[in-house]
Length: 164
Length: 337
Image (cartoon, rainbow over all chains, first blue to last red):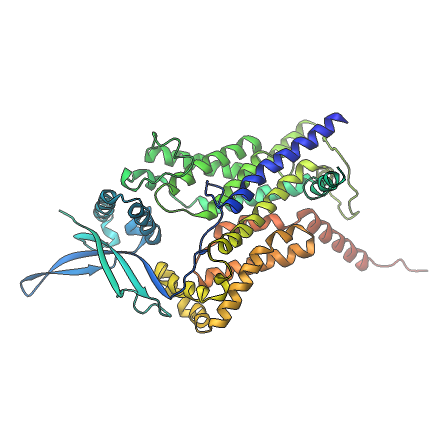
């Protein structure tokens, strides 16, 4: 009888130990993986304005004897692995928020360098040539279908790296 | 002390009412099989190739920041992890496999999250893996159980339950008859964790924005702005025009916001009864499919969690009873002559 009672009490305690952190994370709004308050989309978006970061790749091309800068679509997960584009921009956002601007430059340099190595390793994938990467802070007036996705209303250069 | 006894009895009814071992066993097998499906195709070694520039450690790596694994170590750990997920699904060395799956999963996923982005969806699966590691999930529907049965004819049944006559396979029935609170609390804990995920999300919205989350154009703006974050997927969905159509109806967006927030708030009611369970779990699943098509967030990792709401033994009993009835109906009647 006493063994059964202690078994039941032990199980009750175990259940509470499992559930309490999940409940506490929700009520007290703390993040401690794997516990979370799931705060995604909880802050208000009063205006249809999207403010985030934008990564652009560029290359230099010769037009009529003059060197011009040309933008290159640089969003594929294959180019950015192990990141995807939203993940990479979130990571840069974290670095900028923590005022680690040297790491932002180093990170851009690293992404560009890794891309160049991958381009040489897998020529069959026809990765486009790039000569540098720029990270911008961007604002868009959000429209249905995002027709202006490549032309933000406001662009502010944060960091740029040019590959040697 | 009466309230205490009453609360304790209610707690015991929810968490410790005896359940069949096979229920937990089937849940374990399907859950881990789906985890293999989700995680076996991913390569986490790339995170170890990154330099310290991107390093933004999350727990537990905030405590073990002095050590960063090499790509080969991560690749090896990932192989062992997926192997442990597979053996957990099969129920081979279940206890050990479950612990390896939980601990390595925790370390690998939190390591990936330590580079500036965070997938909240992984947290639920890791929590469930730890719950299973603490439970006796390998007692039925497992290779361990088959080996045990082969070695010993005696099953360690704690209580025999009355089962429908239609359950005809004697050996299987014998093993399925094992019922105990040990097989109930893990299932209920997973269901509580699932409920708290949505309830916490609703609390976060109310805390951060109050009722303005519903009463303003907030959801409409989320539909519109998320196209810019998930551009490739947005192109696909906007071909179908779901979010664009919804964004053209601000009042409908407010209704959907109220509906979504309401569903998240009532998620814990899924624990109340099977009728509530069907209604609430169905609504939450519908909401997540809706979010996938409009806000463009993929909830693939939640598929293994939904499985925990299915009562496998009840389903089987229902199916077996129906089959039995059908067989009786088709049996030729003996002639009077």
